[in-house]
Image 1 (tube, rainbow, N blue to C red):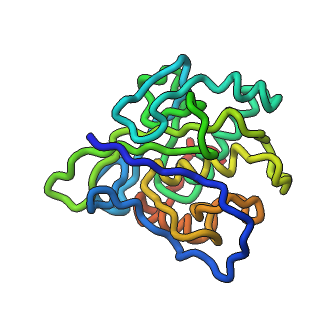
Image 2: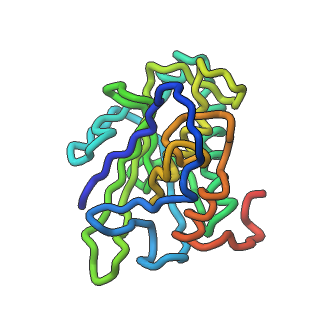
Length: 226
């Protein structure tokens, strides 16, 4: 089982003259990676949860140690219910466009995607992706992912355009994109671009195309959240 590091890094305020490519698949050890069946367009149902106690992941490249989010939220004066709602909305953005289902579980040991705060603060946020050794197919299966936020930064639960604070929803949606198998297509133009911006909130056309390539288009369901 291998781990891969991804970071959502705040870049300097230099202007960009163009837009990023539509999307880029995450390729590890020469293979694109995704959850579920090793074929493009096959959907997946995943569980996510939150770290309950200080945890270490020695075989991870990043998010090697995570802690519960409560101290981080207290620092930014954010209620945990508000934070969890922003994370749910971030998952919903992907669920609304592709054949993906995300379900919250209380037991972090049961989570496919584990979320917490960084024990050793660095950058803005990171995603760590583990994948299985590739079998006879050309797509390698993701086996686990984690997302960790820097607890020392000022966070918000809105998209108010204030560059002094960072949106949990925007950054979580970006990191979830990595956790499901998408890479940075470039700097700007898509949510998966590596520059943090609130000017293009939510998924953009390229983000949607990438998710649909991996998991197929969203399927109508009477139980699907609106």
